[in-house]
Length: 68
Image (cartoon, rainbow, N blue to C red):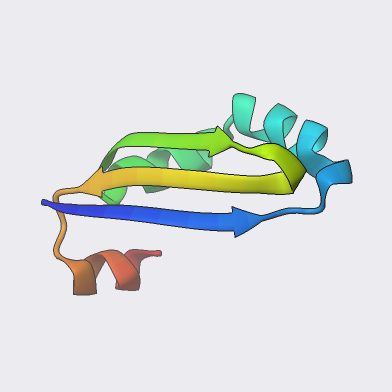
């Protein structure tokens, strides 16, 4: 299993829209996440549009990169 953590930023004026979109994940995205062997996926918001994401995958790193 591999564990992936990332930080990224979005324009603070889009945080509300970002949260709305991610609270209602498209079925196609759910399918892709499952196909990628991803689990325990979380995104945390910090101030100023900074986000921290974490997930785990049963795929090896090379296969995971090719899938995404």
